[in-house]
Amino acid sequence: MVEFFLEFEKPIIEIQKRIDEIKSLTKDKKIDAESELKTLEEKIKKLKQEIYSNLTPWQIVQIMRHPKRPKTLDFVELIFTDFDELHGDRSFKDDKALVGGTAKIDNEPVMIIGLQKGKDTKENLMRNFGMAQPEGYRKALRLMKLAEKFNLPVISFIDTSGAYPGIESEERGVAEAIARNLLEMARLKIPIIVCVIGEGGSGGALGIGVGDRILMLKYATYSVISFEGCAAIIWRDSSKAPDAAKALKPTAKDLFELKVIDEIVDEPIEGAHVDYKLTAENLKNAIIKNLNEIKNIPIPKLLDLRYEKFKKIGFFTIGNSNNVQNNNL
Image 1 (cartoon, rainbow, N blue to C red):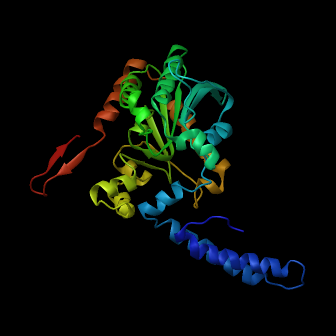
Image 2: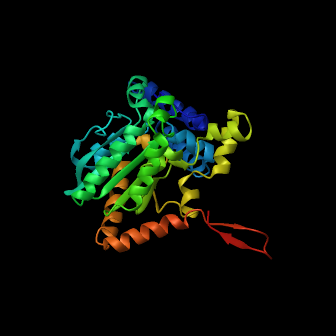
Image 3: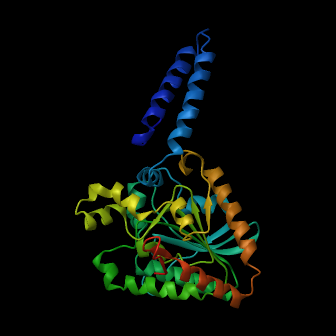
């Protein structure tokens, strides 16, 4: 029985319901429905392939927002060992929207930082829906500087609609905290791998998003603003969010083509929520592969490569075929 499904998945769900009904009817009766079941299962397989290979950006956003999608701490549990969570920014308080601590990946010590959403209303309220406040970004910076002191690679997990925009967040300097992290991450003398696992929104994502390699799950998104927020500004109508999603090019495929990210990490065809372990295994392999590629690069060269990487982001072309001008943002 499917508890939650997306609108575009309705044809798949209808066939699945029919399969479940046939199995229920034939369970205790000597009725041979194997042929019909096989036909329906083949039909559902082809339908999934057809639907999921032609998703619109807005449909990808819907998968990314699936309530059962794995969060940062789910991946920490499945990928790492010996995780020891560290708390507080040593200035104001502990921000539960941003988690971090030491851990091991294949027995190699690393420092983890990540934005953490809740899995239900109660946890979301406790985690502030994954929207960190200034103390969250300052905690992340404290942990990254600690990692630099002990020569630990940093693994960052992004999953947030943005930094918390409330007045108390502004009063405590959220913009400065994010800007400080951008500056400090650009020159940290350790390898940094960034993983976009869900929603990568605005400066709240960038505040822990500067790294040597940026990995992104297939159905994650990464954009300068939320789609509803963009629609409200451009069209004064948040219901035009699907149009905003198309224009912003926030999908892993778009961003890989634009060279904003370095690698797309595969998910099950229906999304990470159907198989946490497989998704975590794919992400773990990608992290280890990229970490092995960069960890022995001399630090001066690593910092130069990091600088050049972000300098090139934003490349675009304007003009007609007879008068082309290449630019960087």
